[in-house]
Amino acid sequence: MVFLAWGRHSLSFTNRFIEWARDASYPVYILHQLFGIKQTPTPAGMHIGLSPTG
Figure 1 (spheres, one colour):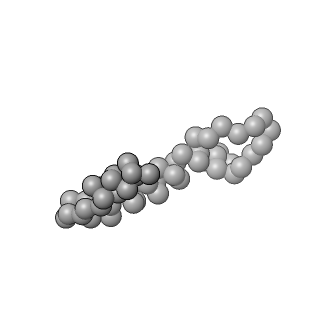
Figure 2 (figure 1 turned 90 degrees about the vertical axis):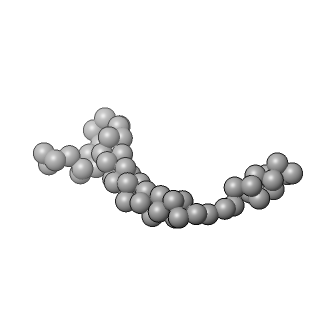
């Protein structure tokens, strides 16, 4: 527990770069999730409707 408290205390700072990086990374995360769904293998015979051909 001491290590968790120490880590939270040591890493709970902010600056302009961290604020910018947090806001800038969100759209990248959303796009990653959208394209990650398309590449997920599905069981044989299961169609989930994400194929560009139909």
